[in-house]
Amino acid sequence: MSCKVVLAQTISASFREELRDTIKSRNIRPKLVGFLANDDPAAAKYAEWTAKTCAESGVEFELRTCSRNDLEDKIVEANQDASVHGIMVYYPVFGDRQDQYLQNVVDVGKDVEGLHHKYVYNMYHNIRFLDQAQTKKCIIPCTPLGVVKVMEYVGVYNGILPYGNRLHGRIVTIINRSEIVGRPLAALLANDGAKVYSVDINGIQEFHRGVGLQLKKHEVSETTLKVEDVLPLSDVVITGVPTPSYKVPSNLLRDGVVCINFSTFKNFDGDEIKKKAAIYVPAVGKVTVAMLERNLVRLYDYQSQDRAGSA
Image (cartoon, rainbow, N blue to C red; front, side, top):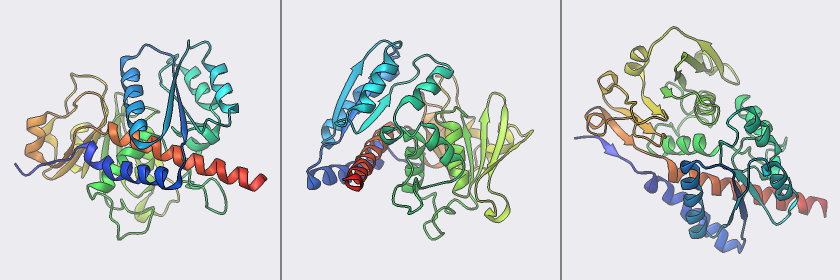
């Protein structure tokens, strides 16, 4: 078979090596605090991965467990602790809008997950820097950023084109429109020039920057299209359906497609996908954790700049 299976471990290796070298050569020790206030086994697994990866990279990681009713106060304490450089919360906690509130309780200067409203607003409006001097890049949510890095690694992005337009002409379908991954990812890819079909149980939306990328930020259009309409058109198909029973119908995929799965479950049939795809990435978890550490080091530097500026 001609399909190339690319593992997240392979993609993350260069990022992790760069992180280790940066931390070691600069003799720094960024501290990340993770809060676990639920009984979700997936969250516990993610915390385990985070701890292991941080130990290997030289990042100090501290997992703090608490009840969900105490979580807000614990986050505020970490916000005020100068020894803490980054904060993350393992969601869901309440599983509703209260979780969105908690995302904004985390200090924007310590939000390694990029979930604070300021980062979300900037991402959707294609604002890539926090300051006018463009010295501080915005923090991007870890899994969407991880998928972007996967797409760069496998060559979907066209490096000849100007930064910000490097997906011009690409058609991408994302089967997931969650607020944590699917919708932010659609916005990121559309802002980079792709035409993105965003699929969920309510239908398909098209994210785009217009003909010739004439728009500065993406727009969203409602469509009457179905999955069987968009899959044959797509250069890239990305899935994040959180159920073991869902499988992408491989017969609808075009030959030579790039397929990326960020769900805990395998949304592609392993044997069938290899008959159609040129490149298949079955998981992105290790790239996600690498992006988390990358965001942490970036925030560490921003905090250092701020301290130096106020001295």
